[in-house]
Length: 565
RNA sequence: GCCCCCGUAGCUCAGUGGACAGAGCGCAGGCCUCCGGAGCCUGAGGCGCAGGUUCGAUUCCUGCCGGGGGCGCCA
Image 1 (cartoon, rainbow, N blue to C red):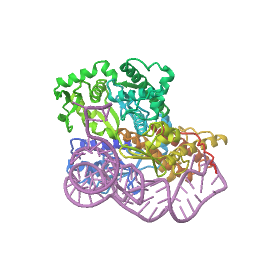
Image 2 (cartoon, rainbow, N blue to C red; image 1 turned 180 degrees about the horizontal axis):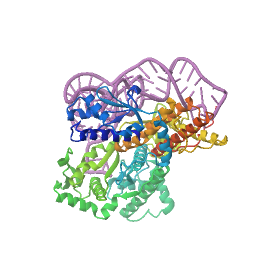
Image 3 (cartoon, chains in turn red, brown; image 1 turned 90 degrees about the horizontal axis):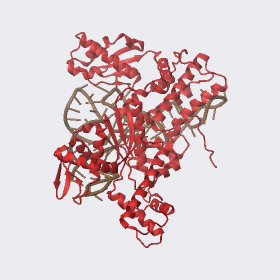
Image 4 (cartoon, rainbow, N blue to C red; image 1 turned 45 degrees about the vertical axis):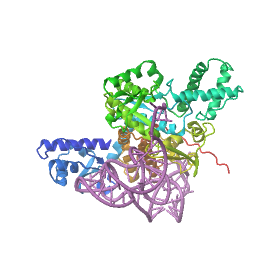
């Protein structure tokens, strides 16, 4: 909040200087309001003079001095002094009274603190998870879900109108679905005692047997006879439905809900795939070659052209996906975000090419590629899952370490770093576990408030309490970090980077623990006690908000497990 | 061979082109009459290499060297 205000004042100053004929420039360049690492250089600093210097053909320090002289009067409400320093920085030194005003501002805003107008009036579609309905969600899908959902929450806070969508790969001609149905059918037949072998490239996981079992329970042996093709179609339906229902359940338990489950098959049924292919033909970006229909993606930077319809007449997955993205664009979103696993990275260029071929702006489509997740038990890698056969399922990890710890760990690193999750650490209730560190800070504040209530100390009124007594360095360090929440949300939204909020939550928790150790809340002189109670409450709001954006709960007390010795 | 991601402290990782590069873990030491010690404080320790762009590069570009992943008329 302070940063935004300063940026405004600085901009006004530059424009005023131009107005007065002191600076000549066309357009104001992008500039930063940053917090200098060295406190000697003030509380905030701007590089505007340096980035402007070239345009105005003046020495950066001179430019800085001119801007300084044109700062609006309002600046002095918060700023004690402004200095020109270094290569041409403008350093701002806050008045001591600033801290209290920040706390008051946060309490006044309450739940709304951190809400931005960045995305006001803009609609964004976040499409994520979109797992194949051929198996349970894996550890990797969990990362997708955590990142996508948190990003959606952050964009909502930033003012966007957000929709969450799951694309169901349920195309009836899909090779994988067919193969999956065949695998279930094989297990079903085996249950009936038929001597059939599981195909080499079939799905071998335990869950396939479970589905076969449940089909047998519901339908008995009725599929033993009958037209093989009809039976297989029926199995496709049932198996797909069951898998999908299970995925939806897992995601709901993980705190992730979708506004829309978009069926690939529905695109075929509505003739959208055919329509899109025709459109591509008309626009000259689809052509026949060796019996297949190709997308001329090389026209838009892809390394080779891609098949849309196979020589056997069946459309590829790409064909439907292009139709799907056309549908998304037609729905009129300002921003489209896709979350794909690293194994899909090669697909980015052709998708972007496809939307460009259709005449849409590919820059409105952000495709986020997240890297692999590895699971460890201490230093021992965990690879196999009993149930899925090959991959660890999301459900298994949720059951073992809980939603809060898992979501937090998923969001601890940037999505483009490979992520290692240590189950032992995530389960550990100790100082080593960052989830508990943050949640504990929140619980600690709740505890202070509980104790205050027990002692008959009422929660002071933020509107009338004197907050200028908050002058301790630990108080200032905390308040400054609290003031950053809107900026952090803006950065996370702009860069599609939810992990920034994780780092921020850890930082606020650290600042609070420092404050707690240095500054006694209950038992301080009454005016100071009142101010500190309000500071603690403001911190609680910020922590709850940050955790909420991650999809992690902010508990009022931490239940410590009794260690069994 | 081509493409994507990553090379920052002993380990795991943050770091919006700026002025002295941060955190956690680990290690060495210290702090409980008192709001929950699941906490706090102190210390040692680092931008893979070479060019380029820039007033300024850990950050952007190119090449090289390491590590991970991917290159289907599968999805």
